[in-house]
Each structure stands twice: as structure tokens, then as C-alpha cells.
Image 1 (spheres, rainbow, N blue to C red):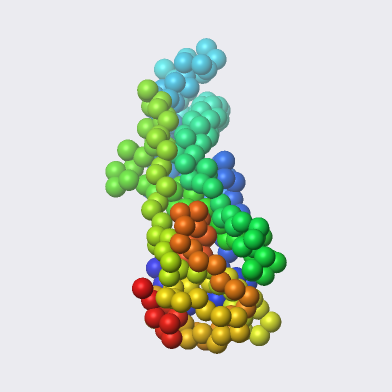
Image 2: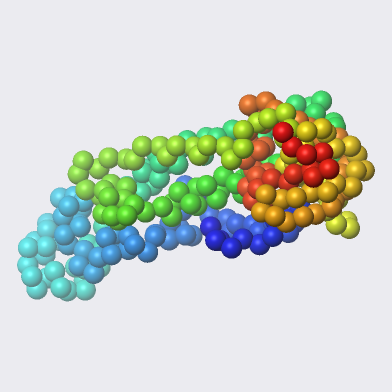
Length: 261
């Protein structure tokens, strides 16, 4: 993630989006972490091909070439063994990634009961779905980019060697903020012609058409006008809403006039 993020936005249209990538095959768009490239695509692929079992299922001519120093250097046989090694690599990583990312991909998204949705702008449900998709994709993207201090212990490397174990599911990260009575899903006009959801901390609920005096956890200030009625995020079911709003805002807005618990 950017170590110097831009100022938190109260407008979803201004939030930096993520380029789409294949959730089942992240290497198709993101590629492999640079630290792993020499281990996954070595200049001399014969040792990895033998360890990964590729040569045991290869045709007899390729097996014979693997035993001949001159043949091992010929581009024809190098291309052939790299092709088979690539098939083995992508197959192993497809299954390994499915196992590693399973818990994060199975996380339930935001959901509000119908009677609460009536209190909020009509775009509430689809906007929350889009924000959740961005949040979940960034979690998966960060997971794909993670490499241990010793790259040889990375699951993408170890999955190519016996006993070819798939990694355990990565744990779902803890929520950035626990549900609480002083947390609100509110909507505001942060600027002319825009409407944005906000994760807001305040002891008492803001009222429609209030001009809020907001301080962000990063120190930024804003004074948007609220619309509709807020919804208290004080139940465990609010966790997905808190996650995606906190991610989008890169923190929490605090109503300075009402204080916080």
C-alpha cells in the first residue's frame, strides 16, 4: 500500500480504485513477486523440473535429454521443459491460491435490513457492495504480494516440491474498529453535487441537514452537510460495513461538536 496516501476523501468518486484482476489467478495480471522469480523461473530449469515431478511424466526423449549435458543446453529441450514446468507451476498455484484465499473470499459482505435501507439514500446498498468489492480485492492483492523473509519458504515455492502441500487458509484480518453505539453509517454532501457514505464516530446521532465539524483520524478536517438519517453500527452484523467504510476513508471521521465515546 502507498506509505503516503492522499487526503481521505468523503466522495466515493474521488477514492482511488484498484485495477481489476483475476481473483482465481492473480498472477495473470499482477505477476509473481519479484523475490520469487529466480526460484520459480530459474535460468536452468532442469533441477526444478526434476524436483517438481515434471520429468517423471515427460516423454522418453525429454527424460533422455535431461541426462545429456549437451541436450540440456539446447533451446529445443529448454523450451520443452519450461513449457511442462509452467503447466505444473500454474496448476499447483491455482490450487494453492484457492486454499490460501478461501477464508477471505468467503467473507460475507455488507447487508442492511429493508427497514434501515428506507432511512438511507437509495444508492446505499449498491455503493456498499462496490466498496466491499474494493476492500476484499485489496486484501487479496496484499495476500498475493506477501513473501516470507526467506523466499524459499513461500508457499508458491514449496508447493512445487514433495509432498506438494497446499497452504492453510490465510486468517481473516481483525476488524479495524469494533461495532459500537457511537459508530454511525451516515451520508453527507461533502461538496457540490456529490453524496457520500461516511464512517462517523459521535456520541449522539447527527441530524439531517447538520453541518458537521469533522476531524479525521489522520488530522484532516471537513465540514460536510448530512442527509437522511444515520444508522448505528453497534451490532456484530455491522462488521463488513465498518471494514469497507474504514478502508475507503483510511480511518474514521469524528464529529468534533458531539465528541466521541
